[in-house]
Length: 375
Image (tube, rainbow, N blue to C red; front, side, top):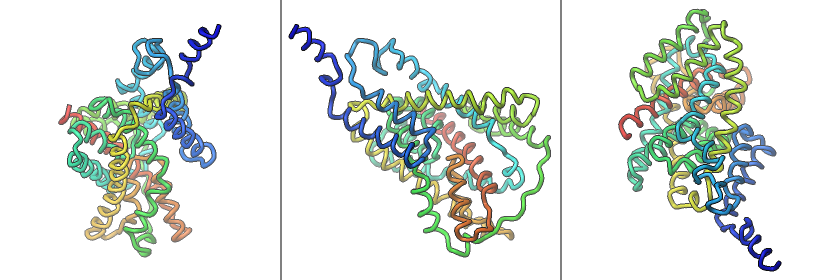
């Protein structure tokens, strides 16, 4: 009986646990705490935090339980990450929720979404300097776009062994937007600049909103064909919404499909952070470079807005540059909140959403360009 008990105990998680598993479990508690208590992006952090718990429960090897074991349930679910299926489904839902009216009313704001992508390419050079390989450096740099699905999609293509740390870093910084972005916005703008009012937005016809996703798809994907899996689904979702004849499909895309994809993506990304594979010196470097990428992207958008004001008669509030990253709608919300703190009648939300939506497109194109050159 003693031998049976000892054999049973030796196959339990208590006997198989490693200190790195305990560290990751503690990190999972932090994620869940931030999501539930502090309300920091709960739709992302709850699935990811719980996934980290799943991935760090020690299991008997060869039993078909672990994420990296062929034939396990988690391994089959992981297929949706490595193939880019979950990120594409998330983009379908995002497209069905996105209203491009603000962008179409003031197309010049699209430039701020493009400018924010500068952070990606600066961080690419920094990652190369610190010894990461070209494909690893590209996967780290895309964190600067503040777009979790895009980061996962590109990393799965170029450096699948880094999916865990890259995804956790990307989603962590998305959740920490209220902490990261406001100090940068205040540092790079003056009180007078933050008071700049944006002019009214003109009306956009129904035909214009229907034609836009079709034209945008062709222009973007002819420029960067590798962005097709993401932008193709994104613009399809938007067309389903704007056509008004496929409302049932649009509603499914922006509710059921994106919810299922978000749950599976979060849980599986979390489960991929097994302590022995996640806690490496590369992971620490990824978090540092990811924070740098996100900060540079925010600053780039603001600085570019200030440069544009040198040549424009109607000035742009440079705070809008911070919404050029594709963290929808978090960064747009922070721009709006900071503006109304300066002047409670200065509403920038719709203009910020325009920059935000163009940032989504810009980060996907950047990912396509990097994939094309480094695959």
